[in-house]
Length: 297
Image (cartoon, rainbow, N blue to C red; front, side, top):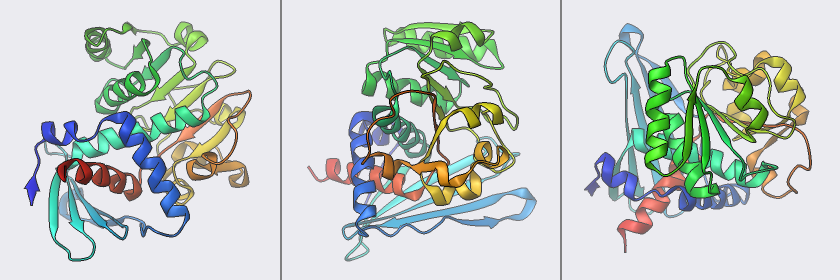
């Protein structure tokens, strides 16, 4: 079994290839070739949490093991175990935080490739943490994005991510107010841990990827904007239980489509598109597949 560092895990998961691997996982899942139950959440002493996220296809089985201990630093630790389905042979242990960051951004990339009306336009990132950085990388590598605005509660953090973008030869600016950038941005990523909305409006044909809120009591996108948008989610079952942006807006779930369904329909022709993701073991399986292929070469 190969135990891979963060750097080694990163090298195995290029964003464009990972987005394609996610699309293939969705296709295989639709044909009943993948098992991926809802994640198991186990409360631990002191307010900590254990999360287990398994998924399996005929060749590869994965389990992501996550522990969250809020007072600790880092507060989240994770690994992804990769096994051969037929024999149970352990093939690799991937660095879980890297897998989570890259597969989440790759899901948003796939959604933007599928749903965005102007996927080559300027990008606005709200939130300058790990997910903000990974989405910046993914959209540059997968869409060719070359202009980005960065907004954060901390201007210092926003400027740090903008500086990183400039190192990647992007035209980047840290901003202190959202409105001017909202008028220009055709791509918006919300990647904060805010419990209350941070995005209240968008350009008429904007694509929004909302990835930060992962509990029913959290919402980054204001209800009035949710109701203006065409709604898509990474998986319906996950969104029904965890997508606070949609739950708090009391959306009509008959009007919400999954990414799996969107891959088989025409791109929207007009209007705001909101893609909400809360995560799923399917995306970890896609990452494990890609990593296993590279390791077997």
